[in-house]
Image (cartoon, rainbow, N blue to C red; front, top):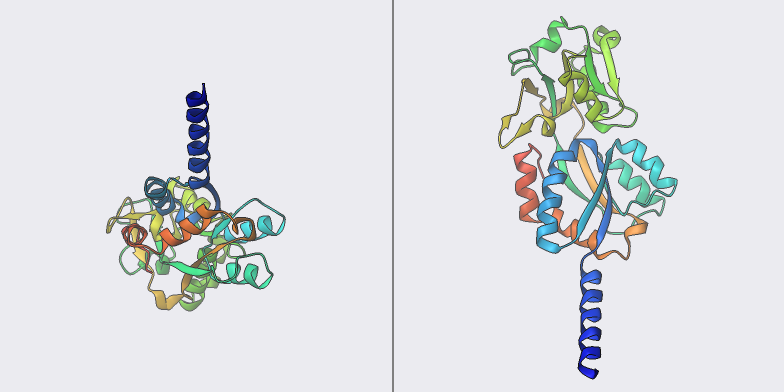
Length: 250
């Protein structure tokens, strides 16, 4: 009886330790980082036992949700200004913010051969619809408007622009044929060094402000070991390899 009681106590202790060691982390993820984060999360779970529970959306909308008490513990934004703002406003763990990726903008069409390596299709202005993400809430959308301004095309294409709520919706407008071409995150159409479909112009970085994407631990993740572990993992070599495969810089 005594041995059975001891065995039961030991089992309970082991289960408690396992529960403490393996935790979940609620992560708000910019839409452009959907595919890379899914790959990173799978590797992270195998390596650490921690589980990533991710929500994907526009950075600006996540800001509003976080300010309204959403249960996110880590924020992987599509810019550096939104996490910095949350930091200034006291909603993050100080010292946790860092740039996890530098994004690349692409002009993409689902049609093979429609967009050449110099983006001439944009300058020719023969299309009916140009898809971009909402520049007020999506940094890739803002970058797209900067490209149009710097190329002197903003006025000419103004009436042809269709706005997606986020970069995922901007991509969907093009992939479904509702827009002949659009500005998307390269990571949405690129893997292992090549396009996954259609045709694209990788937009030169000089045509828009750098798309520095920052990560930060939010106040709700302060005492969650999985939040800290995820941030450490994002800085490591396994995550770096995945980032590179999807066309991100570090």
